[in-house]
Image 1 (spheres, rainbow, N blue to C red):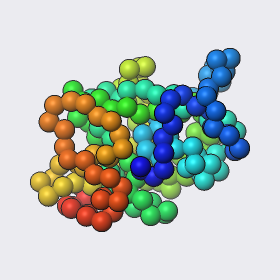
Image 2 (image 1 turned 45 degrees about the vertical axis):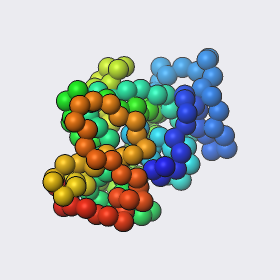
Image 3 (image 1 turned 90 degrees about the vertical axis):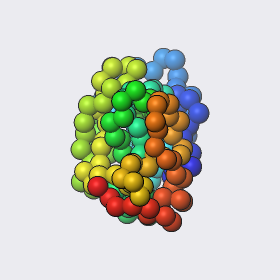
Length: 173
């Protein structure tokens, strides 16, 4: 799975545990940010050194797909990004972050992403979109992440992380 496992439902991630989100937890002092790739992986959140509790809640991204970005990360993965795809939907996560966690997450992206507003079933939520474009197949279509469930008409080819790294099937645009 890219890269690492996503939770199967709502969880709270801390330095030493991943537990179901307590019913008493409040998101009042937190900022919703879409987690569409490794930012939804508890191990990656820890690797990035994000301090404090991070809440991850499932949501559906509307009229977009999660695809492979047009660059390789410092840890050797082809990361995720989003592209507009009318009538498509994808299962992703909302990370409920403190202001400091948003700043730290943005720094961890090494300038490769911009925060942009994206439509979800919970309203418009900011998410990271790669500045580097997307990995495409030989026909120029973006390549979806196989690990992300997607629905909609005319969906493009999907690849696993290993396939994307091995194939480099087309130009980055």
